[in-house]
Image 1: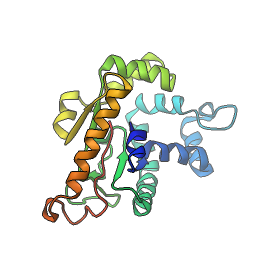
Image 2: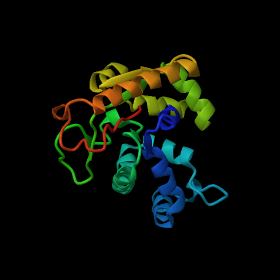
Image 3: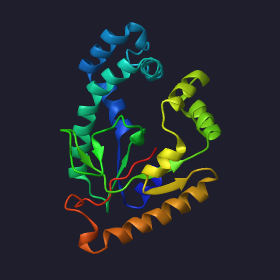
Image 4: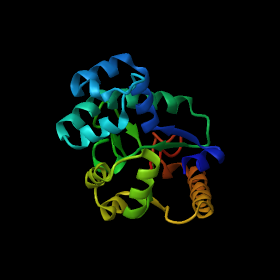
Length: 212
């Protein structure tokens, strides 16, 4: 999905990718993770096994909060830097679990935390639970119990839809998904050219959107 927006000239900032790079490239973060979760977290290549890390944090809320406290400030810092360097027509922030309440520094209201990023609109990409499970198994090679734990931590689809400004239903083929992306892109371009009072003062970079 994000690649379709990128092909249309949109700047893409992937929070999950930033997190992966921090975990893989920072020896300091790796040491802290091993100290917290043990050496079994390491692969033979000495890299962090993200599947094991994911399983650990979803089974223990305190560990999840600790990890978020470690990574989120660094992720937000890099997002802010990427926004300043963005050259696209607008900026698309790809943020897993944006609507779950664990990315509380991302708001559509006035800033209330140091790590604050203004979101002008939220784009929710939905899919059925069956497809979520299938794609997670194929893409991330996760076990069924891991997937169930991840899905159980998410808010209900109905609540997600209430919080979103825009929705794309990702249930069919790639051509349909591309057409939906094109339609949404045209909508955002029209909003960018709306009268100035349509946007608040923080909207100088356009729309920061988010996938779920």
